[in-house]
Every structure is written in structure tokens, then in C-alpha cells.
Length: 333
Image 1: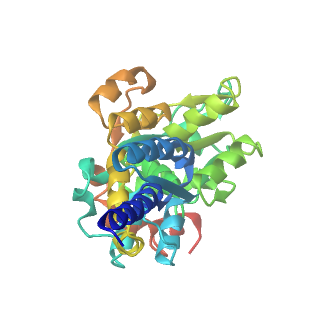
Image 2: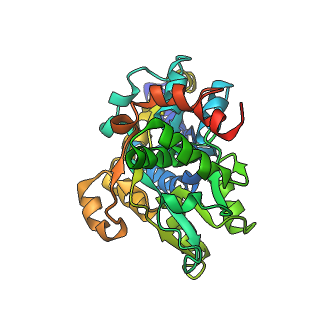
Image 3: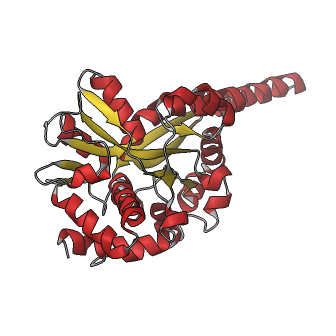
């Protein structure tokens, strides 16, 4: 065989390999919380376009959504997430305890690995017929308040903690907060497993006078189902809910997706993704994007779990462990 013939064969083989390399597909699974599904439906193709442009490679991102804590439990039980995008740090810390996520996950991405935030608001029926303007109104006898289960849903957990923080400031005591939150949860007729289930209960099953949920979910409902059906009410005090992200290291290494997973989560901080985040009514981190959408976000007094409630470890132990305050208040223990 001549040298030229051998060269042509080698080039042909390289061409086939190159074509296969270009067309090779990377697959990621993003296990996320309930009310982020529409956000990632738009984020994912934007990232895929960027990845193909920079790497000349196809990437497919599959989604899994449910109550944030329930999703963390699914990952612990074997659901092979390459990345997790939750709405509360304890759900990622739970994965750290099983060595699925690195213990320094908060330092791996900006803003304590939370590319956006949201706050807790009230969604009421058009015209606010029950005149529900602040947390005190939700404790009135006979009212029906729709809230997802704080034991399975980060959305529900933030609602509980927002009410607790409000009552703590108002009464100045833990007992006052406990009494207040107990009165509020007496008015909760059903505890759905996640935020989207609570939305369905309120909007489609027409149960309840108010849905307490994240700002982005309330805005989404109002825009999709019609501003003629619902109003969004901002209480005098709310809670800041930062949505943390992390790579599930053991799975990403197993799948060979560490580079793509890291790029995917970093993409969430880019101007392109931050604009999508704002479009879906989450509160972006990027200052330029914040300025662009400033009129969309009313200024609300807020607090965080860290600054007012002693941090997530204390909250989880004192409020949400089996037999702790939430179970005592609701009679679930």
C-alpha cells in the first residue's frame, strides 16, 4: 500500500472520528423544585445553544421537578442528578451528608451558589374580596389559606418561616410566634406536597381564599390565567428565598459530565440567563438586569433565615425535625 493511500485512509478515519466527536451528545439531569419548571424550560435551550457554539457538541438537559425536600430525598434514594437546583440550602446540605455534593458547594459559584432569589407573597382572588393585606389577616377565623407542606416543600417552609418571623417581630417572643403560626395553620385545609400542587388547589380546584407562594409563582399565575382573576398582595414583611445550586459530584463523575454540569450552572449567572430569570419573575443577581427590570419588583422589607432565625441548621432542628415545632403546632407528631 502506497504512502498516499495510507494517508487518505488515515484522513478518512480522522474525518469519521471528527464527525462522531462533533455529534456526540452530553446529557444532564437537573433535579429541581416545583415552581422552577418553566424557568428551566427556557434556560435549557439557551445553554444548549451556547454549549454547541463553544464546544461544537450537543447537550440535552432533562428536568425533574417536585417539592424541594422531596426532590432531595429522591436524589438520596438514587435518582442520578448531575446537578441540583433547589430553593433552600438544607436540601443540598442533605446531599453533602451522603457525600453526593462537596461540602464547600456554597463557594463554588457566586452569591453563595444562588443565582437568583424570590420572596413570599399572597395571591388573592380578583379585587381581594376578603381584604387580605398582611399576615394578621390570614389568622382570621373561617379563612382558608393554601400553603404547600413545609415538610416536603421549600415553598411551604418559607411560608411558615415568613409567618414566624413576622410574628416574632410583632410579639417579641417565641411563644407569641408559636401562637400566631398555630392560628394561621388552623386555616390551612390541605397541605399539598409542593408549590405547584398548591397552585392547582387554589386556581383549578378553587379551594381557598389566598395562596401563599413565591413571588415568581404568583406572577406566573396572574399572567397565564389572567390578571382579571387574581391579584398579588405584598405583606409588610417577607422572607428572602435564595435558590441554591450544586453539582452532584459523584454522579457527574460517573456520567463524565463534570465539565458540562459546571458550565450549565455557571451559565445561570450570565446576562442571557439572568434576563430569562427576570422574565420568569425571579429576582436576578446581575445589577444591570436588576436595573432593567426594577419596575417589576416592588421594594419589600425582608429578612433571611440566617439573620433572624439562627440559620438553617437551627431552623431544621427546632422547627422541621420529626416532633419539632411544626409537628407540634399542626398536631402531626
